[in-house]
Image (cartoon, rainbow, N blue to C red; front, side, top):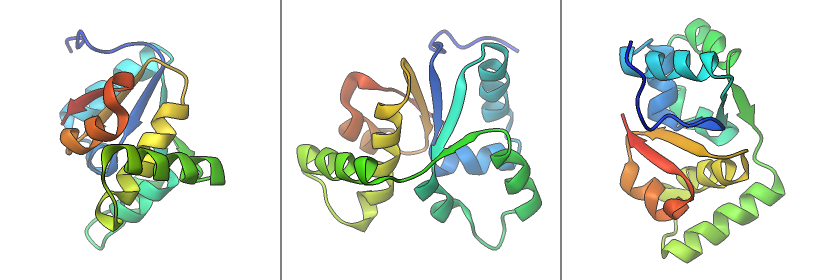
Amino acid sequence: MTRPTTMPAGTLVLDSEGLAKAVLRDLEVTEWLALARADDVRVVTSAATLVEVVHPRISRPALGWTLSRIIVEPVTEFIARRAAALLADAGLHGPKHAIDAMLCATALAAPGPVTALTSDPEDLAALCGDRVVVIKI
């Protein structure tokens, strides 16, 4: 396994695709998780992300096992207000961006530096700016 040069200490954030790929044991995401574990990097997702991940084709036992190995951060009032501010600052609104905004607010509240694994780097970059390293998976 080769260490990505962009892997910092701090926090690794998984969006819905990152979490789904972790559940499916995708090789790329599995390597990121192994590096995070080896470097004692926190791995987190937002509780809101679970809403996107759960569907009939996802294995509930595999999801449960994966969630037992990461931190699922709650969507508190502080996170919700910060997510709303991120949306406003980026000129975005509506349900299409709401869960991404909650994930970004969670990422910005995490100990840094923060890296986010996502299938949607444009939206996360628009919401987080340069405060989070966004990696397309």
